[in-house]
Amino acid sequence: MNFQNIHFTDSQQEVIDFIKNNEDKIIHMSIQDLAKKTYTSNATIIRICKKLGFKGYKDFKLSFIKEIESQKYIHQSIDFSSPFYQQESISQIINNMSSLYKESIDLINSQLDILYLEKIINVITNSERFFIYAIGDSKITAMTFMNKLIKINCYPILATENYEEIHMSYNANEKDCALFLSYSGHYYTYQKCLQILKRKHCQTIAITAHKDSLLYKYCDYHLLIPDKEDDQKIATFYSQLTFHYILSIIYSLLYAQNYTQNYRHILD
Image 1: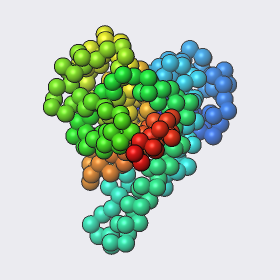
Image 2: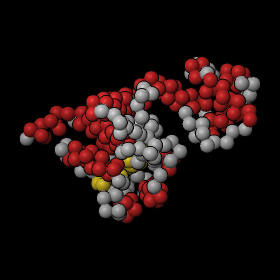
Image 3: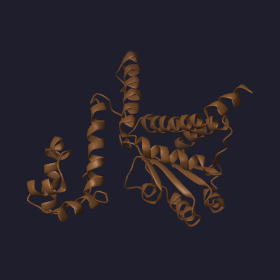
Image 4: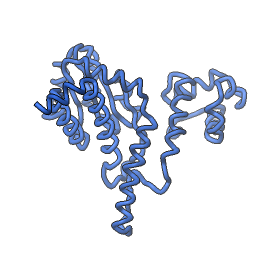
């Protein structure tokens, strides 16, 4: 849970300090219990939750529990931004990369909400057209995903292919859906696209790492990946691996909905 760069009053900071020092207890505490332990009020705790980007204590607690669970899969020896260093041997680098892949997948699995993911699959399945928005490395990952979809007779549209995403957005309607792929979730043009898509009543899905991003704020559905990669990264190992893995899951679930038909389609 990221408590940095947020201004808290003295009484709110006392609550934050209590949460940090009592993680194992918080998961069993009601809002009344927490208020009593910190000599504050329910209103104070709700204000803290809203500053952190949650609707209330229930949403905060659910996210907090998920984060605690995900920490079980993180080994301090792995740096997701710089998994290897110059002085390390070939075997060490191989082992580090292996750990990075394994831990990244375990992290994602610990965060996935199966029922929520099922809703997203239904949105994609029931849409006439499927627009995908991705830039840079994420665009390459998106194109790999699109290549899989073509094999099951699904032809998504890469809205950002020729930097025409704003015009593409004007073409969408309520029968379509749009998927945004961005680790940071902050692109100025995406904000414009989302405003247009909202007016067009096109359902939107975001895969991002930042809950405070405009993608998370404006999209109808979100798959939030743990934020483990910083600006000093060697390469986008972690971010693109997690995107690739989630998109592979989405493809697999889309395939499974019509498994026999898709399997025979390839054989024919």
